[in-house]
Length: 105
Image 1 (cartoon, rainbow, N blue to C red):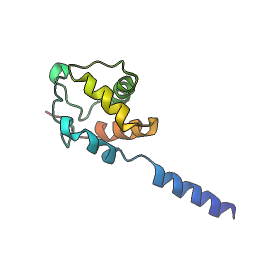
Image 2: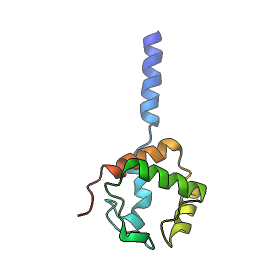
Image 3: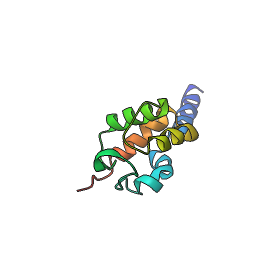
């Protein structure tokens, strides 16, 4: 019985795990399907593809808090973070996905 319950808990956790690629679909209008597009108004002509995961998490949490500032489109990111209602697990998953995309050369 304990094994069955443990199996159900693990299966439920796997089903509820955030899907970074799915979450990122909300971002492709500005960042491109492979995170290789320079977002409107961003500073430094930086793309997200291959960016360090910790940096992405820091930035997303900053946008969620209304403190990050990477250019003129920050208001869009502030609004998106409020509208998307991403959890810490969602942020972790999407940051992991983006960090594994091939960087722009």
